Image (cartoon, rainbow, N blue to C red; front, side, top):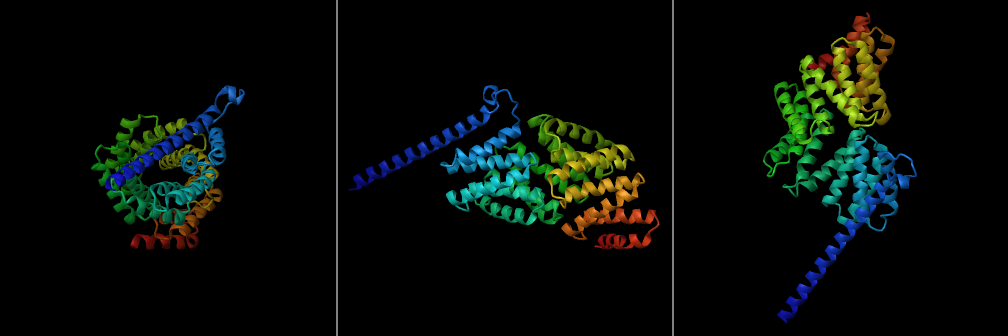
Amino acid sequence: VLIGLSLAGGLVGTLYQARQARLERDRARAVAGFLTDLIRQADPFEARGATVTVREMLDGGAVRARTALGGQPEVQSAMLTLMGDVYANLGLYAQAEPLARDALSTRQRLFGPDSPESAESMETLAYIGFRTGNFPQADSLYREALAIRRRDPGSRALSSTLNIIGLMWAEQGRGAEAEPLYREALGLERNRVPADSAQLAAVLSDLATLQQQQRRFPEAITLGQEALALEQAIHGERYPNTASAMNAVAYTLHQAGRLDEAEPLYKRSLALRRSLFAPGHPHIASSEVRYGWLLMDLNRLPEADSLLAAGLVHLEAVLPADHWQTAAARGLLGLCRCQEGNIADGLPRMRSAFDTFHRTFGDRDPRTIQTAEAIASVYTAIGQPAAAAPFAAIVDAGNSR
């Protein structure tokens, strides 16, 4: 009997392994076929002489994933998640969100709500919410994904999730909550064997940004320069992450008052991003706005106005009107216009930015306080102290805390 049970158990195990191998083979074939069909769109014999852009290939791939892969939900959900990530990285958030939602629903049904696959799709959807200013949705999804990631503390995904939540919280002005997550992620990456230099660089750069926000400039510069050196060693100069790390170091130097050191890095970062991304991409807009801000601080107002106006147009095209980054660009352009003497155009822009910051972050956030201070200064300069008073009161209250 024991021998029979042993043989039966061995047979079951063999059959199970064979079935798993067959499933993996079928999945691999499905993915290969899908990607082959996707790439074939660029073949001039298939495209009949038309030039096919990456965006057109991606749009076609989204349609094919929903139709050709309908009978293979595991592969379909993986492809939808991947394409959602790519759309989001292109700044095409409206196109990314339905793909990410469908992928998450499928993966929760197939693998369970607490599976790593579900966590991956949650993070894609959370990132879209984060970048479009839907912080409650993003926060909820990221927390759920983090709980799943913590079940596998050796996973590289854990430090990535900790880092992106830290980044989101820092952008919301929740630096005290963000820092422990960054420090935990940094500890994981410093101790990882073998090292994952790309993930370490990402954590270093984002922690540097937090230190800059808290005006701890020496540590921020050290961390940021280490991140930039790593990105350059891994990817070289012409790579999106290198440009981002360079832009971050430039911004830290700018805020530390080291304007002459910041300008060449801003200039290089903007040139890199313009060569790497399609016109109007949010990363290009970020560089335009930050470099424009520096030029305004250097009193090179016509150059500053041009860059700030371009950055604002690009951000308004991809982000909601009340998104804080759009408001920041609007407020900086308004301040530049006021300094150029165009108060009628500039002051309403500054007040609009203040309203967004105050509504989104409250009156204790540095963005709200700094904008209130700038508005109070403009009103004082044009001889309207009564109009300046409520904004000055917000500044005084903020400085007293």
